[in-house]
Length: 213
Picture 1 (cartoon, rainbow, N blue to C red):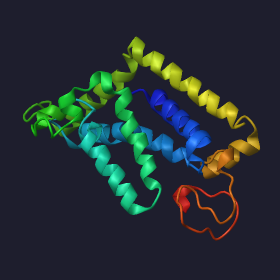
Picture 2 (tube, helix red, strand yellow):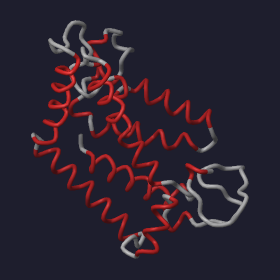
Picture 3 (cartoon, one colour):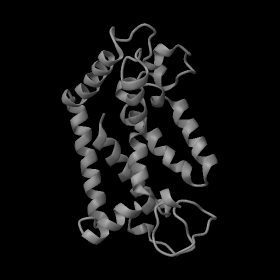
Picture 4 (cartoon, rainbow, N blue to C red):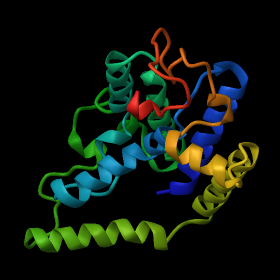
């Protein structure tokens, strides 16, 4: 699943972009969550909803899903679309295990088999048996991690360490502020500037989370 790698590289990339060209407040908690969104959705579908699914990479691991997500976020609120890039970037780290027919579904064929759903392929037995089988399959992806996965997670851990050190999250007061707002030191802004959303006003000064704006 590359949890540390997905979070680490995505948060590190967003932090670098903020310090370079973006220059706007970012809720890094939301960045971290969105970097895992394809796995969260597809594994939930695999375990609980689709008995014919062959694994934990389904519709949310397609380009179509992620472009639709970005469009939906853009329509919801100005500036929110950029968090969809964290979900889209998830596909880059998973590219080694995804066929082009999966990523580009349904453009290379509408067959659900392209995204790992094969009719009649579910485990035999009751729902509880299928549930247990799917949970074991998901857990095995952690216990049988490849060398590549371990190296990617190690790199993600280094990226998170660099972010934490660069933002001074080893200081209790800074860490508490970050956990409460999700914003880095660069996220401190004048009271009239709202996080991540241009052209909006804020009622009071001080950092606020994008999730509560």
